[in-house]
Length: 112
Length: 110
Image (tube, rainbow over the protein chains, first blue to last red):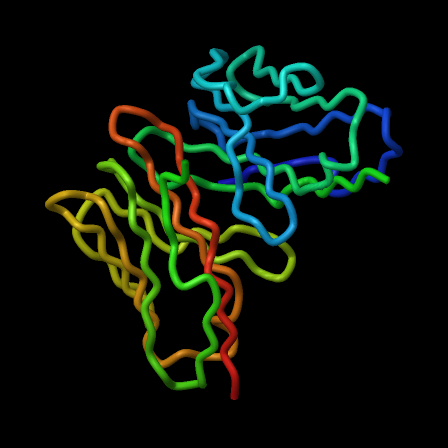
């Protein structure tokens, strides 16, 4: 069984630029999460979906961040007008209710 | 506020010794999962528990089945390859949001 796949693995941006991160969850997993993990901190939830519906996006900085999962499978997290404070690893995870949460390798973003 | 309090924040162990990590929850949780994050940043699942205990080799985890407000991870006979950062993540009852602790940085020394 393929794991959670994320791309790109790395991105380096100047402030003000935009970037999109893509996630392909494990097949059959209805719930998908995006976490932000700054260096030396724990993962912090940004948004999560059940199928194509957003369940909680209260921690997503809505003015610059957006996330979609249009067909309930793959998902895209977009950052517009990046800031240095966005420097972090962006982790995607998926699971079926009542089962183990699986993470991708993460997308490491550096904003200079 | 933080839903999950993880302790200790850092720990050094000599090879062959035992130790325990703990996560306390501010509210009743439905399940808990323990992860180790390696030097490449990958989060590797160690245990998923909805109740009781699970054991895998030198690792054992327990989830308080009564009040569901804490979990422990025991490491027996620590080895160099156990070094890394350990996280617990708790799933709130009635939701599917996983709250993470701030991690325990474990260093095993020869």
